[in-house]
Image (cartoon, rainbow, N blue to C red):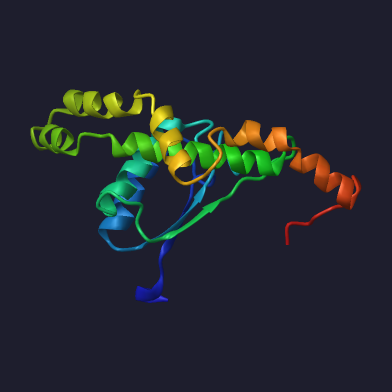
Length: 182
C-alpha cells in the first residue's frame, strides 16, 4: 500500500510497558496516524474500558493528539473498542465516553508554554509538574458545563440506569434475545 497505508493504534493490543504515547507522536510526525481503538489492557487483548488501567498514559496520548490537532482532536478515525463479558456493554460505552471527555478536558488544561519551556530547558521535573497540575485538576465542573451547554445528561451513567432503557428493551425484545455484534 506504500504511502496509502496508515496505522491504527489499538490501546488494548501491545506488549506491557510499551511507550504508546511516543509511538503516537512518531506516527503523527511521519503523517501515518490513521486512527484509534480506545480501550485498555492489563494482560493482553483485554479490551477493557479506556483509562481503567492506565489513565495517566491515556492522558499523555490525548495530549499528543491535541498537540497534533493544535488544541483539537485531530481528524483521524476513533472507535471505542471494548468487549465485556461481565459489564453491560452500553454502560461500558457510557463509562468509556465519560473517561474520554474527562481526559480531553484535563489535557486541554496543560500549560503548553510552560511545558514547551521545560522541555526546551531539558527539565523533566518541571515538565512533570506542569503535566501533573493539569492531570490532577478536577475537571468535573468543566465537563458538566459542556454537557449542560450541549443538552446532554450531566451524569450519563446514573441517567441511563434511572430511565430504565435496558429493562424496557428486554421487555420489548425478550430476555433471551441474542445479538452477535455483527
